[in-house]
Every structure is written in C-alpha cells, then in structure tokens.
Image 1 (cartoon, helix red, strand yellow):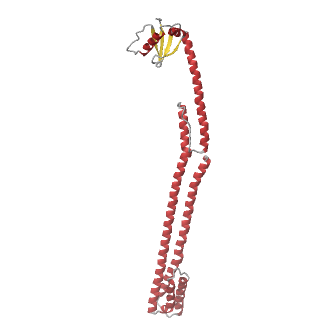
Image 2: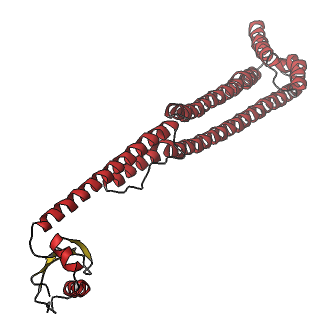
Image 3: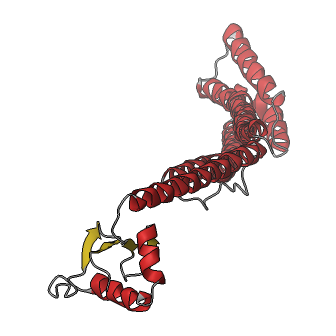
Length: 314
C-alpha cells in the first residue's frame, strides 16, 4: 500500500471512531431529554392538580352561593387536569372515587372529606412513584450511554495504538533504516543494503534505487583502488630500479614482496637461497637483537614491512 493510502486509512479510521462517539453522545442526550420532560410534564402536572384539590378541601364550607360555586369550579378544573393526565393505570379507580365523593366532600361531609383526602394522598403517591421510576430509567439510560461512550473510547484508543504501530512499521522505521544504511555506506560498509520488507511501496522503490547507487559506489571505488594499486606498484618498481644496489621490499615476516633487477640477479645466483634466509633473519630480528649481518642494511617501512639493501654479495 502506498504512503498516501496508509495515511488516509489511519486518519480515516480515527475520524470514524470520533464521529461514532459524537453520534452516541447526541443519541444519549436525545434519549434522556424526553424522560426528564415526561417527569416534568406528566407527573408534576398531576401532583399540582392534587395540591390544588387539597387546597379547595382545606377551605371551610360555606352557604354562600358565589363562594360555593367558586370552590366547585376550582376543584373541577383540578380534577379535569388529573383525569386528562393519567400516566398509570392505578390512577383510574382513585380518580373515579374522587369524582364520586366530590360533591359530598365540598358540602362538608366529614366521611367524604376523609375519603377524598386519603384518595388524593394516594394519587400523589402514585405520581411520585412514577416519577421515581422515570428517574431510575433515565439513570439506567445514562449509565448505559456512559458505558457505550467508554467502550467507543477504548476502541478508539486501541485503533490509535494499532494505527501508530502500522505507521511505525510502514513509515517511521523505514526512514531510520534508510539513514542507517546511508551512514554505514559512508563508513565503508560495502555489504549493508536497504531492505524495507514491511514498508510502503514507495520505500521499496526507493530501496531499489539506493541499493543500486550503493553497489555502483563501491564498485567504482574497487575499480579505482585497483588502478591505484597498479600505479603504486609501478612507481615502486621504477624507484627500485633506479638504485644500483640489490634492494628488496619485504613484509613484516621477511616475505619478499618486490625487488629491483639487481636484487633479482642476486637471487638467481648460487647463493640465492642463503640470501633469502639472511633477509628473513634480518627482518624478524627485534630492536633488542640488532642485525648481525653487516652486509644487509634493513630500514623499517613504517609499520608494514622493511626495505633491505645488499651492500656486498657473498
């Protein structure tokens, strides 16, 4: 998958989770608001009607026609509100009893008043119980919504970690690997190559170019080194041939590496084998054991070898 698609997939997944959380929160509030409105509109209205009827019953009965009619009218309006706002089936028989005892209770009958007060108290209790039930439903709905949001949050967290790990494998780690390969190349490591196995397709294309450039770079260096080595050997032989004495270039152990023509002639004579042994002994001697062969002049060639000059040929 290409880098553009990787970024779109990761960011799109996180945005989808965020949108789901937003809709879940809106849905939760939309479900809780009607439950609260029902408590306020339905049950509170019935309780208010009960309070108005109890206020009318608390007023002393009178024989004045206007006062009696006003009490009956207020009681009737409150009773109509309660009848039009039945939210529980238990309210039906209670309201029927209140309606039957209304006239006698307003007239001042003690038994009817006692029964009306009892039924009105029962009607208020029924509505308060309904309010508590609605409140419990709203609480359960809020708790369920909170758990849904928490679950979506955990899903979002898990997806975020998965997206970060995917980005690390597809984008971040290949960048560091590319830097390490280039650094190793600059340090002279000719075997290190860029191999982004799990990276995006762009990195695999870059890997082909980088590996090709690294191989070409070291190949050119090897060709240059070969040319330099040939040039160095040619210059060495030319300088050796300019000397008239037999001169030899030896390694650390006295191994003969190069010689001028006079040295080759000396080695081809009958004492060539003995001359070789003398050169080895002279080169392998330490500083505490000076060279005993006065016919050989041994000069160190830095720390890589020796230059031996034959002063006299035995």
